[in-house]
Image (cartoon, rainbow, N blue to C red; front, side, top):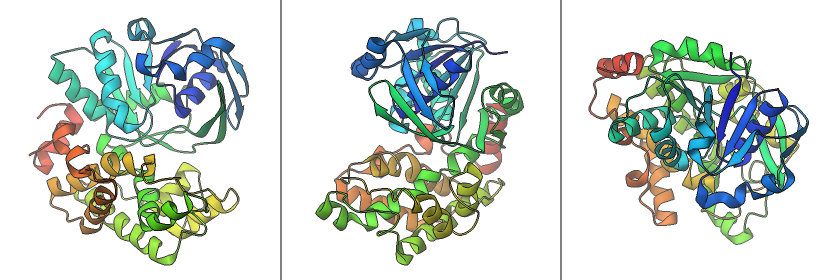
Length: 364
């Protein structure tokens, strides 16, 4: 049974998780990196977080709100790292020196964090008996709507979850189900990484509408006005390449339209049916510029990871690589070099059989 939880990262997801779990009766400590202390100052001032919407509703008081990582994770049962993918390693480096035997560490959000955490522990020479895992997305669609205020727009129906090593996934899933009944165990952490909704949903419409985004500064509805048949065809080509990698690894293929439905964002069907239904009412506005997370997170930590795994298992990904190249040219950043590839995941140069053994057992 869980009682004490640390939530690391004071972004949208962190606000929702810490408030929702506090209202559920758990003892929650909320942490942010010292250089981002401004993110938690409104919470310290108000004494908690006001949460509204589709999850629990009310004013949630934290057990502790801090920028001291040692006091944040000391003595807790579960550490939830709820941050963008580009911050996952920073939070790993912060908490690994203070990690305790028996603790459970789970990344909520984009997959890949568990492997990077394990590699960081190895690089730092730290050996602890912990349970390490991740999900393929956040448990909620949520936004901070004001200082110390979070709104949950929907709770995810299926939260794909895996442990590293995979031999303890069932134990991890059983424990997390206490918090989130939507937890669905999958084969291994490459399945959570490759079932990346945002890597398909965000970069392609953004890049293919680049001119319009710059001209209007995002003043148009990207999933209505910018979601044309040609954009959808490119998304379908990217998804086909992703599914070929999934097949090569012997994992279950979930086409984007079905994946989007299973999470709870739209009806089962084609990409265009799923996305236009989900955004038909809200008419989601475009990013205001081309340095948004739709590119700076979803390209280097989504598409680069997928394409790099494709190279490892011998699957060609020309469309994905073209999107990476265009994003790199637009922002004058080498996302292929900067992104989270198989070297950074600690799985480079493994055969498929060795990779599957490593993912299951934690060693070759």
